[in-house]
Length: 196
Image (cartoon, rainbow, N blue to C red):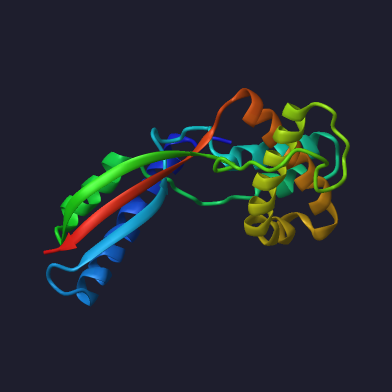
């Protein structure tokens, strides 16, 4: 589900315009010397397929191949999200010129944010014997929970309510596999600025 270069460039251009507008608006609201700290969902390298939405794409493709949803509905489904890298954030701040950049740090955070819970049954009462499997399943359910809260209304609009439980059960399973095998993480950029 990675984007072609032309789409990536269009999203970068839109991000640059939007972030510049954001900085200009905040600059008008703030006093000289006022501070602002931002947390931005970002990336290390652009067009990196190691994004949690890649897992959603894998599930949708599986459901198309099994005839559960129409291929055309997936083809027309797009989430125009751009995750900037450190260099892109820095360039927009410097080009805008409204703020001094004090600090820009990159943090990688596990999808489950270090989630842990006492061992036992999973929330859907699935019996899993191995403690490590229980932990992976719980971590997968935790990730699925926050993704479902964010994504279900968007996915329901495109694919219908009737497939949501199946979609998110599949998503949970793919997250469990990814946590175990691929070590993907969210990337947060923390930016500290002072108004000039």
